[in-house]
Length: 115
Image (tube, rainbow, N blue to C red):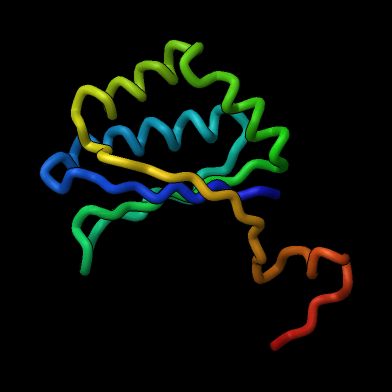
């Protein structure tokens, strides 16, 4: 499994547009083979940072999903929300592998130890 972590710098005055953008992306990820873990919006502290986390079974599965960007009308429509509203000022993507409470052990397949 691969998890994509997207860190956004958002315009706090356009949070409603960002929320709409986020809701629509959650639907697209779910509809195209991923699992969306949600968007995490400002509450306390910095008012211009948000995160999104979503997973695919593999990097290859994620790449299949990415092939739809800029081609499929529903993806173009959601990007239009971001672009026209100006709700996202900048973003960066990082890929991680999750270590989950009931998930697989270490990368080498050795049994997990509690600690």
